[in-house]
Image 1 (cartoon, one colour):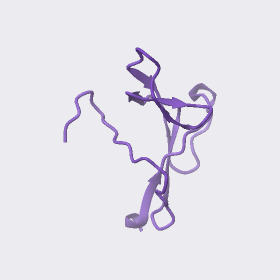
Image 2 (cartoon, one colour):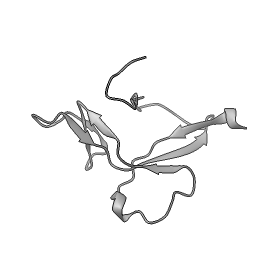
Image 3 (cartoon, rainbow, N blue to C red):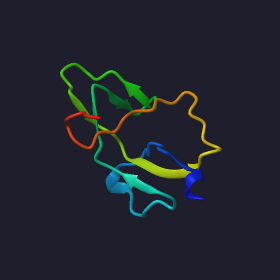
Image 4 (cartoon, rainbow, N blue to C red):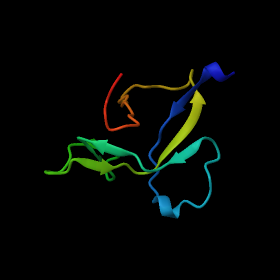
Length: 89
C-alpha cells in the first residue's frame, strides 16, 4: 500500500550526461544545489564549502521508493529541500 512507502536518496556516481536510461524504480534528479556545504565525491558525504564558495551543485540523486519498514535512518542527515531561494515554513 502507498502508506507503507518511503524514499531513499542514494547519490549516483555517474555524470548526468552519461545516464542514458531512466531508473528502474523511482527517478534520477539533477540540478539541485547546496548552500553552505558541498558534496565530497571521494568520501560520499557533505563537507564544508571551499572559501568564497556560496553554492555547489549536487551530483545526480536517485529518488528511490523503499518499504518504510525496512528503511533505517541511523547515521543519515535529514536535509531540507527548498524549491525557492527564500526559506519559509
